[in-house]
Length: 306
Image (cartoon, rainbow, N blue to C red; front, side, top):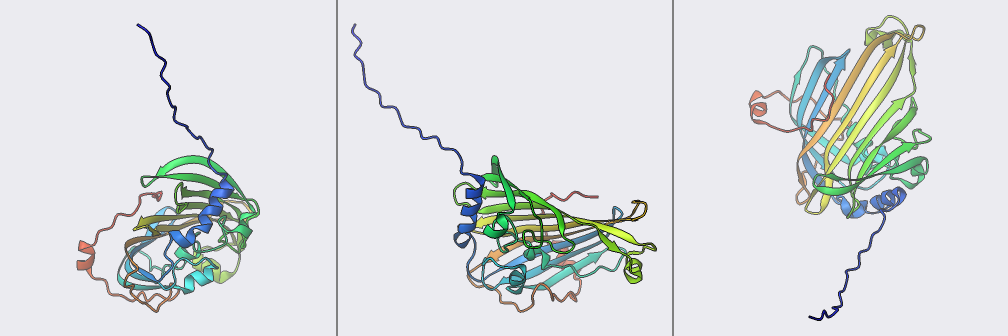
């Protein structure tokens, strides 16, 4: 038996390294115009605001709200982002031993990294960041780049936070490997201590001696794809304030607040036009138990309960 050599064509395999993190972030910014709504749209939202004092939950406020965005995702300042977005409360309920203060809903858009420019996605502030490609992982069933960021010069220009200025701002952004869409952004902020010694401010806090306040923030934004367009699905703004005696450094009080938003519907076809911005939401809506008995939402369980 004679063996006859047969030619075999081997497939060419091209192995490429992932882009540098700076390139990934740049592509994500460039594709905001194609990845996110660029026209008016509206959503229905569930919001929840909770407040703790010394690890004790004091108040909880929940609301079903209508939302209207009159221009879509046009990057700019937080003031511009707030002025283009409108809210209307449909239903609400409140629990807790203390009279609640109206939630600051506008905070959920003023720190949105896709909408605003004081974050590592923007070229100017981005020069003050160190980016690190942490690897590739999966988010909501899609492969994503995991890019870590650390701000080397945190300020009101390079981060979403102003006075008192941040001492540190760091986090992670998750960007799809095919469309370069930002699908999750998580940031942690530590701000410089702030001295409080005015009598009226101390009375409001229930303190009798001067105090020093240090605030830390945890912000989360998650985006979901619907018919090829990404929209804000979930947002959370969390702050912890620790009050200490400047003379002894003894802890006097701890306060924590968590404001969450969950989109329950989204439409671009016939958006519901509203007129009230997030700064001026009317909270005087009667409580209707029948609505809440049948209203169900599933909020991401990523908040550390205390």
